[in-house]
Amino acid sequence: MQVFSRLLTSTGCALLAIAPVALAQTALATPTQSAPAQLAQNTRPKITVLPLFHGDVSSDYWWYYSYYRGQGAARGISELLINELVNDGAYSVVDSGQFTVQSGNFVDESAALDKAQSMNIDAVIAGTITQFDLQDNRQCVSVPFVGRTCTDETNATVQLNVRLIDPVTREIIATAEGEGEASRGGGSIDLYRGPDASSDDNRALDELLTEATEQAIEQIVPEIVAAENRF
Image (cartoon, rainbow, N blue to C red; front, top):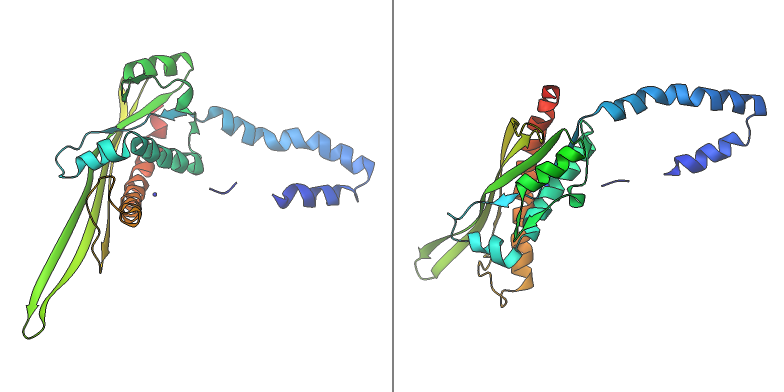
C-alpha cells in the first residue's frame, strides 16, 4: 500500500526566443487560464486523517502490533491512506499533525474534532484496524525411505474500517471498509516477536503486512471519494 521538473528549464529556454509583445500577451492570459484550476482547488472539500486505532485483539499476534511495533504502525497505515487520497485529488487533505491531541497512547478524537471545526475542516477520517493478523501454516508429508518434508506459508491479513465524521454535527457522513491479504511460501518465517528475532524475519513480516495494508487501502479510497457529493 511518490513522485514529485524539467518543465521550468524547458519553459525558460523557450521564453528567450519570444518577443516582448508576446510575453506581455502571455502574462495577461496566464491568470485567466489558471482561474478554473484555482477555483477547483478552492472548492474541494477539506479533510484530515487521524491515526487509526488498533482494535484487533483476537489474533495470537495482536501484541506484535501493539507492543513490538507500537503506535508507529497506526501512523504508518494512516500515512499510506493520506498519500492515496492526496494522489487522487478529490479532496484537499490537511495534515492532522497540527491539531491531533494524544491521550496516553491514543488520539483524543473529541479534541481533534473540536480543533478540526475551528480550522473549517469539512470532515475528519477516523477508524479502526479491525484485523492485523499473521498466520504461519506448515504442512508436512512423510516420504518412505526419505523422511519428512515440510512446506511453510505465512499469511498476513489486514482489515480496516474508517468513517468520515462532520466535525460540527459529529454526524458520520460515510463509512468504508477494506481487507487485504498477502502470503509468502517456500520457506518459514519465525513468528517470534521479541528482541532476539532476526532482522530478516522482521523485515519479511513487515513486507507482508505492508502489502496487505496497501490492498485494503486501495479498496477504501474509492469509497471515500464516492462520498464527496455528500458535503
